[in-house]
Figure (cartoon, rainbow, N blue to C red):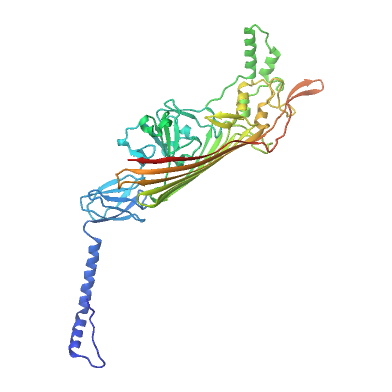
Length: 555
């Protein structure tokens, strides 16, 4: 609409133009008011477009949810919520709107009005799906023989090793723990009596220490239908470990602090020296042999009148603590948007052993284990149909044990079992064999027992073990829904390197047998007192592995 104006030329005012100008000025406020009312009416109509539904989507804590898919179930029109959780959708009244976001329970609501606020609750989303070798499937559509456990189940177990947390949770999977040594207490496992292959994020790997907080699910594939794509490697079944990934939404930060005490389930209860000597004599008499211990010996054992010559030592109490503490800290964060998502976790574990230590030593002689883990999982949508995934994993393990190097095999791993010598000595040493220490403070012993157990535990040096592992997985996935719905291609490459090193800092020690003489106590020495020699180290194993999968095609 043209603006009204008065046309003036010099000092001459045209009468006709003046009359029109006055009339326009007279009615201009009324016209302007009418235009304002019309504009307000137009704005109101824009806010209340027929069929337009608006609202805000939040969590149960009132936090806005970004990237929620809002779909008209009838027409298929889909929009997403913004960073403030707001959305707008053209949908007819009476139709059903579907609200969905990965990690939250989906909702289907009937639209009745122009405003619809929605609250979404978090869900155990993966429990509605069955994990397969290279993808997932709805549980109601699956005919595979498989079973899964999830993060919540694993964290409820106050254990360190993943194998131990799986005990009794998956039918067909049997576990057997053969040692309780820190860092080596993971149980062996079998699936229906067979040795299953372990696959972590699609990559065959050995099952070593891993943090529970970074695991999304553990699935066992039991039959040929579930693991047939592995070919000959599927003969024993498969165990799938799937780690967490980032999800669309606001950044989440989680911190876990766990501490506890580990105690032996059961320890042998040896006879005291008096009863041992009495029964030993009885056994000799039954075999027609003369007893070894005299009545005076038995009385000295019973009364404890001669602690050097007739000791009564409870070696389990002398060497072992009642319990061993462990501490674990985990910090992880996740989040992302429609184009990129991330999950980052760092974990620290400190697991101590049961052995008592000596304040006189400047080094640690307990059986301890420390572990540091870093994991990063990143998903990036390069295009609508192409996604790249990058998984980085790093782990550092530091172990300590008393005594010299003693390499053994546990669950197929070459490890240091120096502490086993101590437990072997505890099992075969009678309470009356020798005193812990002689009156002069030297280690007790004799010609039959030259390895004082306290000496083995605190005066035989120590051994350090180091483990370093790093892996990087890269995968590309191309969906081919434009060709056939559900068809996709995936390529995966992985690099893994592992190093294990042991530093031996062991030394020898002497034991002494004291005998009462005319002038005092005479000592007889067995063995020699040595010193720790630095520089002895051994690289137990080191390997690098490059793995790639053929390009899979699933339809």
